[in-house]
Image (cartoon, each protein chain N blue to C red):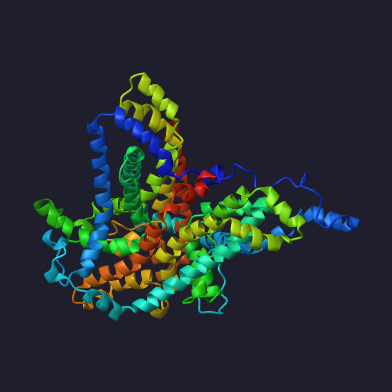
Amino acid sequence: MTTLRDASPRSPVRATGGRGPHRGGPQRPRGRRLQRWLGEHPLGALLSAPYTAFVVVVFLVPFGFGVWMSVHDFFFTAPGVQVPHPFVGLENFQQVLADPAVRQAFRNLLVFLVVNVPLTVVLGLLLSTGLDAVARWKGFFRVAYYVPYVTASVATLAAWIFLFSGNGVVNQLLGGLAPDPTWLANQGLIMPLIAVYVTWKNLGFYVLLYLAGLQNVPRELHEAAEMDGAGAWRRFRSVTLPGLRPVTSLVVLLSIITTGQIFTEPYLLTGGGPNGASMTPALLMYQKGIQQGQPDVAAAIGMILVIAVMVVSLVSRRLTERKG
Amino acid sequence: MATTATAGAPRTSRTDRTRPRLLVAGRFAVLLVGAFLALVPFYSMVIGALQEERDTTLLGMLPLPSNLTLENFAGVNDSIDLVQSLLNSLIMTAGVVGCTLVLGLMVGYALSVLSFRGQGLVFALVLLVQAIPFQLLMVPLYVMVVRYFGLADSYLGMILPFAVNSVAVLIFRQYFLQIPRDVFDAARIDGAGELRILVSVAVPLVRPAILTAMLVTFIGPWNEFLWPFLVTKDATMQPLAVSLANFSQANSTFQENPMGAVLAGACVLAVPAVVLFLLFQRHFTSANLGSAVKG
């Protein structure tokens, strides 16, 4: 993904030659061959070993295990009991795809995306360009936007419930305009509300990304455009926006990845209700895989979710890189 | 890696002179509204936690002396042992930060200063880890950790999936790469072994990176809900985020002011992370956070 491409401008492998003599001085031929095979500093492999073991145990093995699980009949047994887990092909996937609850969960993510991504991009652009130009209170604004990002979802969701519950502050403020049924019980409003919450929570991080991107927009371009008589809006559209396109592409990508992980918000706000209107694949995986003891089905949902996230990411990448 | 604050300043003074005042005022207003919306939930968290009786009217959003109390903190403490929960959060977070510092510095050093067979592969792993989505791992990891390793309701089980923060590894590598090669060569000529160079020369030179990595790493496990929620069923082992979530889901109805008690717990959970952020906010620049992104 983007992180992969952008993070490796420098090759991690330094040229072994041209860095002075080996430490041991002249050695027996076999020892030298071994040294050449191990590289200049075999200690490096030793220092990397714990991290490598961590990645294998926590990422690679579960990854393979999840793929294996999704095509086998896997269920929990009492500890120590050996039971066969027969290969079932795509049966788990068929079961998942035929399940209306699963389809609804994916549709809900789509609603989430439609609200969250444009809101994040527009507000991120608005606040970061404003912040870049403002002279006073810059530090205060930066802190204010970023605080939600460093605070636990469990804590901030409690405050949102306080604000958005039936007789909460927001409905008191709206008076007769308050939605009926209220926010958390409204099938049409709950997913957009969660999308707004996630936008609110993560916006500070994206503002920082945009601010860094603004430093890379050449100032000469702004000056040249100003000379040519371009107004503020015109300069924003023709200089700033194209200059920020790589950042926008990244922001959209990260938002899409975040979308796939939505769990805590529906779990705490609604438990997936009302009527499954805020059910998400991750929450469904928890219910099916761990509460109802069907980890194979949950693993299949996970595979479909990851593939869906990848497809949407690729599509968004095409769109954001062509735009403008 | 210039911080955004310094790089933006000269541009501002220039535009202020040329742009109409209206635009400047409008921009400031937009920023103010944004800050207001960002902070309102925090304000209501504190006010709600201090209310003796739940009051969601607009007047109730003001700190009215007649309705102020600290009872909610005692209330939430009756249901969940706040000290024990905080301690569990702290142990989990300290475990993650500790492992990240020790193991992360080791691998960061190996990737940047040393050269050995398999180095490219290890670096590829650091990047690959960021691309594997957690939801794919959730169920198999749960089965492994809880069923096979028997680590349910243990600190080790909570810490394991987060043990080494790969963003921190990238930060360490980045900082080690910035140390001139001559420093290491000089130490080698003086007869220091590689391990000694790492501990006595390299680590002291990247002290800013250590602080940044600690801050970046701290936030994750302290705020984490899903994983500790999956592996801890024993209430005495649950970190605060988990016990507070369970409290808000079920037990809070026994309270006189249930919402107030939940918000009091939320304040206790939020304060350490927010205070750390406010103290060290200079280190939370996009350059650091996005080091995985910007390279």
